Amino acid sequence: MNKIGLVLSGGGVRGFAHLGLLKVLDELRIRPAVISGVSSGAIFGALYSYGYSPDQILSLAKKNSYFGVSNFLWRKEGLFSMQPIRKILLDLIPENSFDALKIPLYINATDILHNKTIYFSSGELIYPIVASASFPVLFQAIPIENSKFVDGGLLDNFPIEPLVDHCDKIIGSHVNRLGSIGEKNIKFSKTQMIERCFQLAIANSVYSKVYKCDVFVEPALNGFGLFKMRNMERIFEIGYHAALEQKPNIERLLEI
Image 1 (cartoon, rainbow, N blue to C red):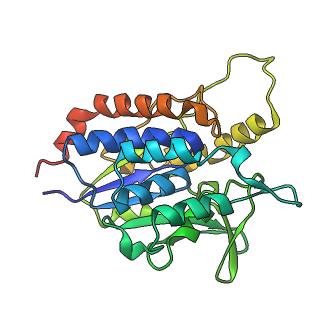
Image 2: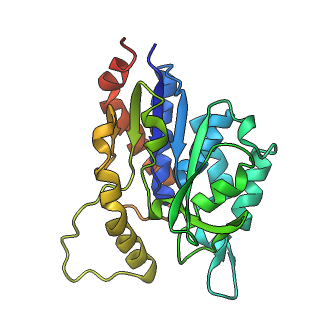
């Protein structure tokens, strides 16, 4: 049987679409041999690898509001703290170790002191997850060892590299499809402007690597912001149906 790898992009609340894909994989009884995730993809990838089902993760998110900015602590320097989400993740994965995961996982974060992407796959788990999801400007950088880290999507929002030489087939899930905005007089809030500029900046780092995927799932989520938790269930459903459309292609990955 082919060894199947799964890539989960970043995307804030749009990452709930990854759970829709994971639900389809569960229904098809396809278990990824290894997962590589960034930002929200790292969070959901870790929880799934630990043993939580997609429906369980959605239910937990409803209770804890992972990405609701209002639930994070405001810091004096004008950035939010990631400590609340760290506490939630420690409660959900108390072992705080990559060794506790049932599926091997890679998590990437951006080392802002040394200008490079770092992939984590062993040792302490929670700090790399939090670092990978620490959206620049809005959230504080996370100290790990002798450096500081922010959202892995800044340099690599589609972390396929760890899987390329170790998997027979790769499924890619990208939740930041870049669409045009037709309204020339549209007014952006500060958060929306940050979101839009970030998406434009990272787009090429994703689409230049799509050819390495055997199946590429990219649900239409242009109308959903990165931080609006009220959309999570709708995004989950859109991700689920986008994955169902790829069902024949996914099933073919099992063929020798």
